[in-house]
Length: 332
Ligand code: AHM
Ligand code: MG
Image 1 (spheres, rainbow, N blue to C red):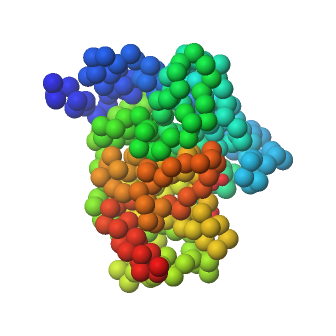
Image 2 (tube, protein in one colour):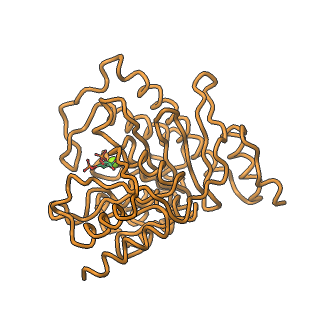
Image 3 (cartoon, helix red, strand yellow):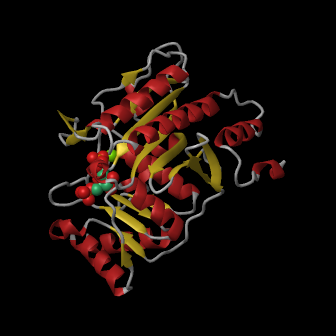
């Protein structure tokens, strides 16, 4: 019954997830439970973030993550919270996290799902009260249940995601996710402790006039990237760059635009990670009618070879991503 798919604005996230599950008579409810676990951890992390300026949790922790970048204490807290929620929930056998070098076995060997997560993205913005985010991808395990998840379970192509989403801790906190049947956004009402459907069936404009790229690296852009940036300027586009991927992506998703983190001389595969950042946002943008590529290839079709691999990212309105790809093709 198609009417049942249209749930009104103001529906709580829990109810929304429940009702969506009823549309699949054979669904066991495990994925629904998993999404609720993530939402619960997001509420807890949201609380920590909101008070991070008050208590001494946001200072540098004096530790480095596996990419050798500075890790803020709040990253560590978010990582612990999400992993704990996924472990306690019981639906996930294995988690991979941007903050952990190796796979994390939850001990739930009956769990059917694998989760890839960037628990707190935008680390340079944590201390300065600027929007940050959580990004997650959910895959069905390929190995048989009853044992630990395998590396092959974790290294699946983006096209195999069963769900993906992000939480933006911004002027409002929102959770945006897809299970492959459109994209829906929920806004958090902290005093009630609930996410409410506020952005049903998000679609992204086919084109737009925002471009988001760190132009501080312009000296190491390839000619194709420089030419595309010049094209954006010639079109009188607006430059918008927060430096938090989730926030930059979310704005462009709603308004139309393109986000680019290109390969540069310094970082030949760009900076962002395929498994924790690229694939989840690629799934969402495609579900919203947009496009994601590494400059030459559909992002979700890249065969991953290692947990922390990076990829150049061109993501947003289809026409703008196509345009960027044209400029890159010319340089070859
Ligand atoms: P992080 O995972 O260490 O937080 O880095 C990822 C962030 C993204 O949120 C953002 O888009 C990008 O790094 C910004 O990088 P740069 O400062 O090089 O422009
Ligand atoms: Mg990150």
